[in-house]
Length: 100
Length: 527
Image 1 (cartoon, rainbow over the protein chains, first blue to last red):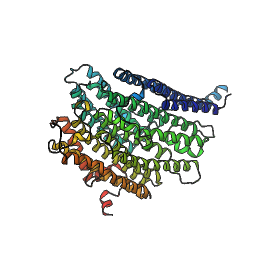
Image 2 (cartoon, chains in turn red, yellow; image 1 turned 120 degrees about the horizontal axis):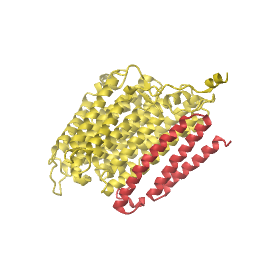
Image 3 (cartoon, each protein chain N blue to C red; image 1 turned 90 degrees about the vertical axis):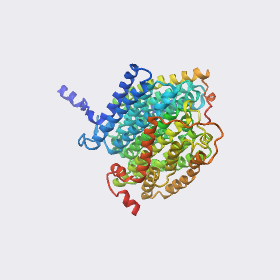
Image 4 (cartoon, rainbow over the protein chains, first blue to last red; image 1 turned 135 degrees about the vertical axis):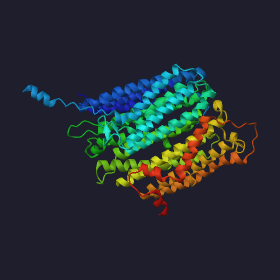
């Protein structure tokens, strides 16, 4: 059996890749996909713990998280479409009317 | 024989512990939000905003009545329901009342804006109500999962509201930045929940938990204390983003500036208060003060408290110093909202630091009182900013306020009152709020924190007064006519002005209601 620590390490690596992607990527869709990667790495953590403890609640939380991520995806893509219609660009560096 | 053995190993089914009375306010608002959406489809465009706005206000009133009923012991002695998923305490109920007030005021402020911009009223009102349900769940959740759900419900509705003027690039940009950074921080929060869930397993084979009370009980028996620390740090980052504490505040000015003004008013008051409700519940009750010095629980408590002290100092200082150089009113108020989050965190630190229950309740009451006064004066200020900005958010620079003092005296004097209250001038709500949080911090010996807080208040005088000076002592260079006050704006202004003065002059009643133990406020002044 693969020890718990491996799963945790894998999900930590995935989470880091996702977080780094959000900071490095400049395309709104790519950033959004990186956020999804972060959420899924958390799901992996929950499932790993849940299976290790023989406790079902961790897997139930994953269902809730998946639902939330789906709702977030719907809204996020809507926002991205709205901004693309007005600007014809998905590069977040172009979104600079409001100064940083 | 085998059958008997099997029965013993199958875990017993837990009674779901359903209690609808405890979630009655949330249920009412959810139902009203759906009703508003339906009614909207069957109403003529011209009547929409009054019909849906009226229904929303009625729903908020009904929910407030239920909260008062719960407050006066309507649900009996029950402390929690749904197996600890929802709790019933004064902290939850008082935060819920603040959220309902914020929503009602936002509806009043947004009436005229919906007309100017020709926006779909029903959609806006039902989104606002769903956001309110999210905030209420953030205050009432006794379990990290419910807090996360509430936070997402709030955030998703607010992302849409920020981008509500979808043909406007500023609104688009604000919405996208809020969405990306908001989901980014939610992921951190969720990872924190996952790690805490894993870390709170005990060596006797008991699985981990996400229930806040059980987390507190298991701190010292946690098998993986390191995971617990990382998890708590992730939770702090997640909540830090939501309440806009200093290193995690970068999204705030852009989002607040670009969002439509009534939505900014809502975002600065509502989600911030909701963030504090969850933040305090998780850290004060989930990682509480532990008497024995060497245990894991005590280490976790010291660690988060020290981290929070650093965040508080940074938040107050960054918010106030950067606000000094802003030329846009909405941006300035955004940095001011960061600074106010910092002041409220002073009370939060005090509440976390004390082992004494009475003093802890006092400090929590101080933070709640601060969030109430901030909500009132912030919504009041944004009412005036909405009226000055007009449609398309045209006039939001500080120069646009030059010389309006005597042309629109009601607006100008009201805005001056709210700004003075934000400074913390005596006889205003802001003053009492600051006194309360600073006093609870002094009681716990955080002198440095209070000194930095007071110095920051002195700095903040400059940029608040700059706007007042612009309104009354500068000449107007461009043609400008004073906006006519609509009925809903007049009501919103009346409520907020009354609120600021009432909380400033007679805070005793509200404070007494918030805390369980006396000394009354009159004793505080005599001391």
